[in-house]
Length: 484
Image 1 (cartoon, rainbow, N blue to C red):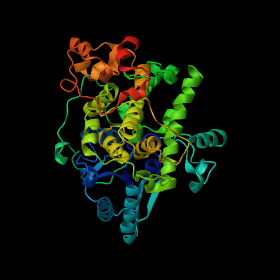
Image 2 (image 1 turned 60 degrees about the horizontal axis):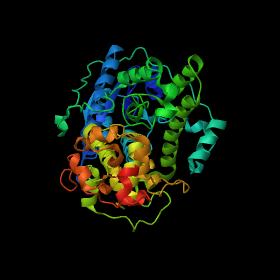
Image 3 (image 1 turned 90 degrees about the vertical axis):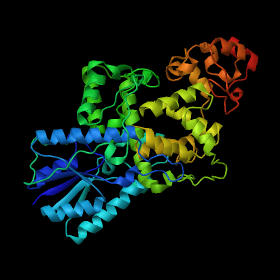
Image 4 (image 1 turned 90 degrees about the horizontal axis):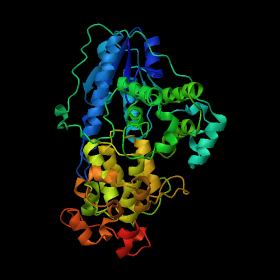
């Protein structure tokens, strides 16, 4: 009797405990990925699709890669479309499955889906077993119980570092036995779900390709071939280039790359190359990822509510759609914000530094409802992860579990620090390429004659600012260009 293995956000064979157990315990294994069309639905309030084309394309590439890797080991990946619980129940009946194994998830929709799967499979007397594979640290190894996870990231990190350890990786199965007569189904296409493919923008920081193969290639290239880990701490907030940061997040989000694989590769790097603040800092960022997961487990759907985990008052948020769309389309009149939003819209990628700034500007400067921004990035980001995305927006919106976190960003200061020569802004806003760097980041305070020399007319070739940017500087408008 086969065991059905339901792949979810664990699209890999390395360090996949649930799949390894299914292979070890079943007479054969029926690996399946189920596409629920509801995950591609439109946001009812704002109209964009819950999952945009960049994210969906990456997922479909990951499925194709997983199928290839399974076929190399004697197996295959079934692709099915429909209601997840009903599809699993149908497969269990058709193949006489002895059990269903899957990775455990923790968000509101996923937990509800698991409950329905459990109900339908229980009616068939088919047990369902879930395996925790979402984080660097296993919840059983944490020094806190689930409902007492510290609200503070600092306290969470310190507890983990002092009292927890990272488990070893689970070995990858060498052979996958598949039941006879299986119809794997066709790989999904973008057109099948109403998406038009987009050409890769040549300005993109990295060309993301979905799947475990690309994930492991990126890990090897960044750590071992290009030695990027050695200086990660000092380059990770840059804006241009492929190797200023690890860029593992997309593969981590879909489970194409295990966080434990990254951790143990860091430890190997420390033995063979160097152990320094940068190697520590990459693990530090993995712990941030864990923190958001366990906070989500603690507070559940509260992370998606405007009032957040702390139930903060929400009356001050504006539901101004015109303002929101000017921000979303990169038309705020603040070059650093607009460049980051246009990069996101054209590539599905946005740097961590960019995310912090665009969120702060939308919420703290324009006052627009924060959940709209979080939902927009959910749609566009290739590396969308519900816990990290909504957790970060919780912080910027000051509704997070940790009341001590203040994420207001002075965009002008940030732009001067991270794009002092205006190279990043000029790449994504070519209409401003001839504006002198000293005037670029406060362009709305620059005199019209200087802008005219650069071929720019505010309100025509580039938008007027939606916000009084003089808030970010004490200098008078007439001296901005001279002293910038």
